[in-house]
Image 1 (cartoon, rainbow, N blue to C red):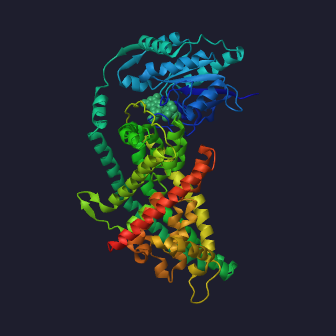
Image 2: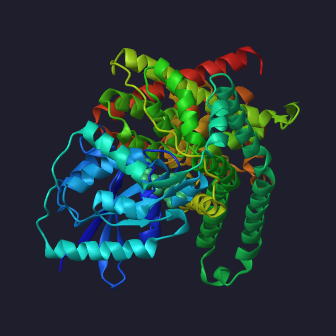
Image 3: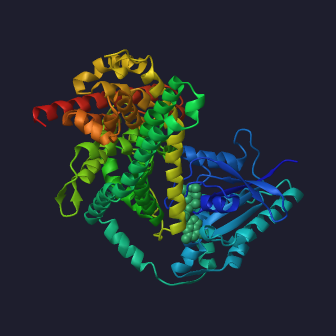
Length: 628
Ligand SMILES: Nc1nc2c(ncn2[C@@H]2O[C@H](COP(=O)(O)OP(=O)(O)OP(=O)(O)O)[C@@H](O)[C@H]2O)c(=O)[nH]1
Ligand SMILES: [Mg+2]
């Protein structure tokens, strides 16, 4: 028998994904701003009768005449035009109870389709908080469909909702042909929405005052940007200051593990069954490739977690949407809209979800420009690269009360990425993606206190993504590199790194990057780092471990090895390179998919490498000229 299907539809930020997660146990991203979900996602929900249905989470939408690619998905699924999918059997319209009038406009359009429909009146807790008492029964009568009150994030009303889906679904079986209701125009729908909302509101007290006062401050054209900048500043200070003890602890664990392998392996049972050559190979593989290489990336876990703690708190509280609003003027100035802000912001985690999030931008040229500059936003994969260089070369001193120089430099690198993106956008909008800047309309979500549990889950997910990368792609590439570094074996008086396969390839690349101050080890790290930026760190760690002349040298931490071998201009040029360089094949692949061709990803690759080369060169030569 065919698995029956129910779709969650409604305005952006109504809580569809939160309901979807609560009902199916999925872990879809939810955040307190519109435009989070950009794809259709399916999950399984078991009804009270034990029968499974397929539940579909959709991008938020304001109407069925879709403007942006994500709304197009919603329209197609709802109308049964999505390739390979029949129209959903049940429509679950999700409404924000505290924003009823606005959300009822699209709800009517869905109800008019004549499919079995029910309404999840979500966020009733926020409505209550704001002093709004609603009459669900009146709403039910006015809309002509069942209304169930829910609080997705507290799992309130879920059983009732599942039961309602079941009964709605039964009626779907009885009347396969729905009876479409008369179609009305948008102004009529707006008027009806107003009347229905008025009829459903039992009482209302003005408790919005605190929040509007908060908005007066946070959105103030002068104070707002200062607060935003201060917040980001604190965030980068924290990334260094708070992480240090944890990172140090992780580093000593890895050092201890290396010492343990050194001490244990020659005396273990393996020494009896393996030939000496194989045992040596195993030892080097474990210490140089795995512990030094992959371990050098894992020590940055605390930094990643702290960064995301800030980002998640800003997302959940509703502050992020305010930041988008503040940035809208600046964005308009470079020819982008505030709509681009959220995708660009997501790119701070990773350019891949950032590029996906551009689906909520209706204007194709706006969208293309945003895709092209997204890789300039500093993704979390750059953090280990920046952090290792900063820790090795920038003294841990204070330049003012509570202001550490290291955090300041990190802040500067992030800023360089943002300024770079803005300048490139400005140039692109005047040339290859010329066009009118589209307007910005984004409703401000309600302020909410971030829930500790959601934060913990979100942080755990980010940490897991990072560790999984370390265990899969970073591990694989580092081990491959270690193999290429270990063979062929050096003769007496030769350097292992120089004679190895990897070393010879690097010597070819070194010719190209020598003018910008890069050495042999950096040249060696650049190619494997195309797989993932963090590999730059593990490559350096592995290369120096393989090249170490004695055990004392091998035991030094990566930072110590770097600071004794690289000049400051080289280190700074390396940082400048990573601000721009498109060292990530997955980003290129996603850009290809989202722009339907190779033209734009190739363009992106070329312009970013050119910028990286130019700016690394400028940095190196200026630093040399300044005598650093
Ligand atoms: N207080 C409260 N918050 C909720 C409730 N449901 C969702 N939220 C919060 O509202 C925000 C938006 O939720 P999402 O599930 O991302 O909304 P969505 O409808 O999927 O939004 P789009 O994907 O942008 O269309 C998140 O911060 C949720 O934590 C609720 O019932 N009560
Ligand atoms: Mg969603």
